[in-house]
Length: 197
Length: 197
Image 1 (cartoon, rainbow over the protein chains, first blue to last red):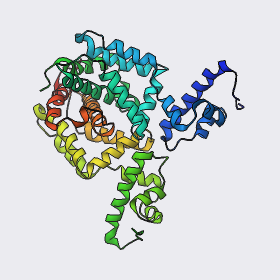
Image 2: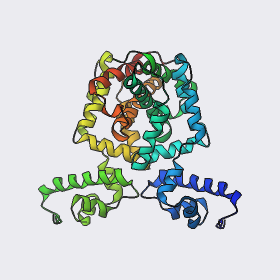
Image 3: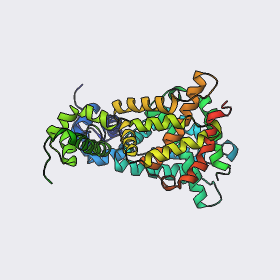
Image 4: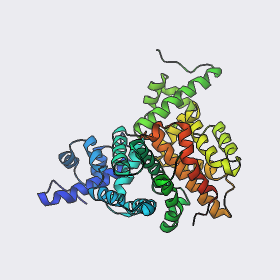
């Protein structure tokens, strides 16, 4: 295929999505320092100048490639409105649905694959966890208790996501969805409402 | 300080440890692709030729830098001999002690910071988890049940390690050790011996 030059305005969405898909793959495969705009452009089959034109810099490209979709933040907020007795199961389903989603899954993967070695993404992950997994919860008797419970819930969900989707360690990686919900939800329920002392 | 040339045999241990410490820092900070032997040598204050002399290649250097210390594998095996009613707490303590250990902690950090984006380290992490967290367990009624329980235990412990030591998300990052054991051990006990259906 030949390189595609900067096109009319309505092509912008298509091309910039293609660049972001390529960027997520490159950051995940070679890390932030090992990724070049040139390599991303090659993978997206566009001219490097277009990547600079749309995103300005490698730093801004990483930022855009790891930006959580608005739809995901809405799903998270909705899951947290689940009645307490079903909240554990709802949070496991939230994770399963997000990773199965064509738009959301690759962004979460890019965040987790880059956050371990890149400070800017780690900061973004911290914000995502604090605002989405912790910030909206109404758990606990006071602010410290609420943050503690949300943090423990996050630790279980994030560990599950790393094992299942990033590191792909069996049998967690290929466990049936319903089996996983049945196994994990009661542990989340303990963090949600039991005495933790 | 001046560069230190290849020294007599008894210096080898000192210099190669210094190179490994520098390599762990570099892989964690800039990823595998973004790390050069030259940068590692500079950080270790040795000649790049010495790094090649001791380790042969960047790939072999990564392998050595992420090799779990024998002492850690022994600690893991010992923890798994804890009587079942105390096993959950013993596994949380195992994690806390490992990360507080001057020799073991930095290696675990290097593995977790590199595994997300580097296939060779991901494979090593998989082996470490399977052999140490899963392979030695005697849990469950059959092999599948044993692996499932060990995998769920790993998901909680690894998620806790990511939150506390790699991503440093509060309040999990600075929770008191005893408070963390009290909060998490009962959840591990459920994975160890309760009905998961």
